[in-house]
Amino acid sequence: MRFLEQDGIQVRDVNQYYLDKYNIHLRINDDVYEPAEDSFLMIDNVDIPKNAKIILEIGCGSGIISLALSKKYLNKRFIVSDISFISTQYTNYNVKLNKLQNNIDVICSDSINALINFSPDIILWNPPYLPEEESSFFTPTERMMLFGGKKGYEAVYKLINKFNKRKMKTTFYTIFSSLAWDPEERKRDDSSRIKFEIVKEQKLPFEKLFLVKILIGD
Image 1 (cartoon, helix red, strand yellow):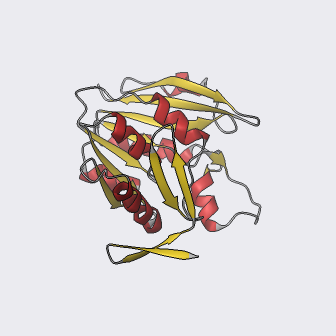
Image 2 (cartoon, one colour):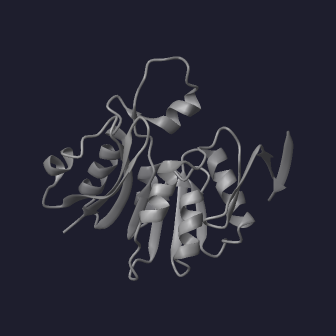
């Protein structure tokens, strides 16, 4: 196993990727969520308006979503966060690897503190969205990356409630799975301050993914 020395931090160089479609190089290890269909669904379908200045990504993992979007939206400022220190190490390394230091700042923070410290115009989160399983097959790290609660969507709804309590006005893009979330629920969850819109669906062998745009505020 090789190591990369970056800013005095040893970063384990395990898996290397080159994503030709986005012209992005990545280096991550097995403790970091690797790019997958949900990542690409978000990258390909998120629309950032001209007047948006600050984009906050929560749970950045490898950093692929903000890396790709920052190449598409060159005049935007991306703040990317993850509660996992090792994920932020790799994201920071990947930012420098792709020469995007002027576009992206990386912080180690949970989602709530990230919101408190910034007033983002757009919030992105490719969350853990599967229902919890009792199986001991999964490691603690895998559980954190995959499971969003007993029903699968509690983590996202908890964050939406935080938006509401703080009276935030923002646009929130996130992912739901048909294994945990019924699209009809968006009608029930709509309110005067929160509107759900399905932007794109992607059918996979065992589930369907939904990219959902949630408008929050008046």
